[in-house]
Each structure stands twice: as C-alpha cells, then as structure tokens.
Length: 240
Image (cartoon, rainbow, N blue to C red; front, side, top):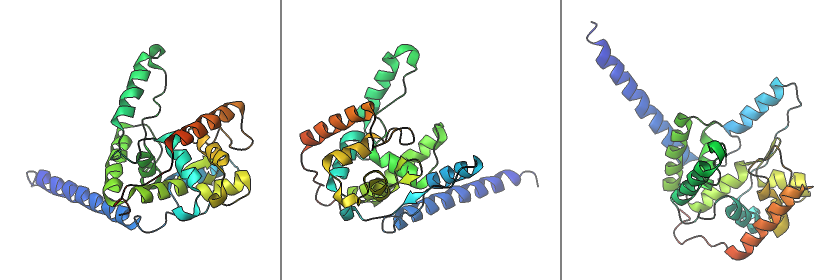
C-alpha cells in the first residue's frame, strides 16, 4: 500500500504538469486572435485600490494596432527594446549589459535596467503577476518563448500597447492617449508618443502630461532615437 503512494503521486504530478502546459498553450493560441480585455495586473491593482479604501480606477480600451499611431509603436520600441524586431524574446546583449552595469555599480545596489524586452513584458502582463522571484521569472521566459512561436511581432506589439500600465489605473494606448492628451491613440504626435513611452519605466510615479523635467529629458532622448531608427518595418512573414 505504502509502496504504491510514490508512483501514484508521480503520475498525479505528471498529469498536473501536462495539464498546466496544455492550458498555457491553449490560452496563448486563444490570445493570438482574441483581444485581451483584462490582465492579472489590472485585477491586482484594482484589489489594491479597494483594500486601501480608494475609488476604483481602471481605464482600458482595446483597439487594433491599426488604430494606434505608428509614432507610439516606434516610441516604445526605441524606449524599451530597440532590438525587438530581431530577437526571439530575449535580448542577451541587453542582459549582459545590465549585469555588467549592476556589478560595476556601488555595492551592486543599482537596479538591473534595459534587459526586459517587449515580448517579456507582454508575457508578464497577460499571463503572470508582478514579482521578482526566480519561479515567476522562469514562467515569464516560458511564456515569452510561447508567444514568440505562436504570435507575430505585430501581434506581440499590439497586445503590449493595449495591456501595458501607463499610469495609475490607466492601461493601454487608447486610455493613455485620452487621459493625457484628450485624443485617440491614432492621432498621437511624435512628441506625445514619446511622452507616453517615457513614463513606462515607472508609470505610477511619472506623468506624460504635464511632464517633469526628467520626463522632458526622456522625451527628447526618445524622439532622437526615433529619428535615428527611421521607419518601423516588420519583416515579411512576421504577420503570422
């Protein structure tokens, strides 16, 4: 009787793992076509607001990539992940630079920056929760590879621009454009797009409009990178 417990637990564990993998693949394939109207982060932030006795604030409107200014697509790529069109989810050069920066900083206290790609941020926003544990990071890498396999680069960018946190209770390009500039995401100017991209490292602390002096400097840098990058062109066959 006791001898059979081990194999039974092993089979149960194996079935659970297979089931979870199958479920994850199912949702990745579903979200290849279906809009992502709510994410775990939106639910977590909403629960935090209610727990703190604050008024629930959640602004989010899904729009297709064609309804988002190309200025914003280019701005977030230049700001967050300039190798987005070329890597397969992870930017190993950026990771290496971040590690070197961290090791060379005083007592290693400087936070790693610039290593998380748009694909990684999309995987985290849509399928996971915020956190710094190795377990969550491992799941992030897993989902990153899944969406790189199943989705096109255009789809990854579309989901990213619709799900990323862009302010307190503000998610996605359309909601951010209306909140900060009182216009649709399709009509964002180059500078306005850069302003929204500038707040992404800390959207609950920074504001795109009116910008602080720091954000103003970030806007100038991002616009310069956009000018240097040129026209945003997706590779043929990337439309999935």
